[in-house]
Amino acid sequence: MKTALPPSCPMEGLLRVITGPWTIYILWVLSEQGPQRFGAIKRLVPGISTRVLTERLRMLEHAGVVWREQTMTIPPAVSYGLTDRGAELRGVLDTLGAIARRWEAEGAFACNARAAE
Image (cartoon, rainbow, N blue to C red; front, side, top):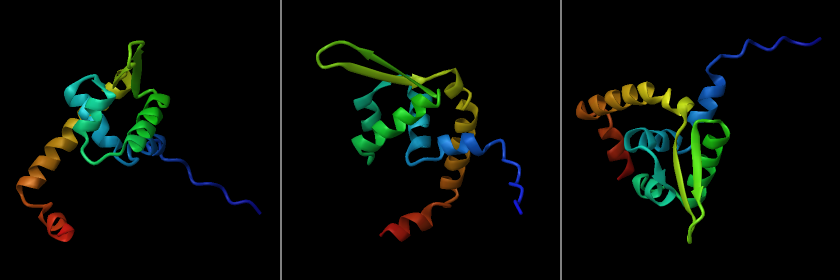
């Protein structure tokens, strides 16, 4: 006897795309700073490894959230920016940023800093 699968949440696919390691941070940087070269993104996302940044950018490009442009120079210049689909996330990112700044001002993240010590 087969059991019916529960209906899929319409946000499930979107959340799979944006909740990977460092993904929101990368999207926030591109939303706030505009198109950036790979090295600039790496500097703007402190702590991310080259491998993880490459994986995340490829996944976001495949999902149609980020565009990639390569200029054939020596060395090649590769830039990334938000597509129209990625730009749709700006309002959500702005809202999350405002909430994060408010919570930080209220000391909500102080327990995280103490736990890391």
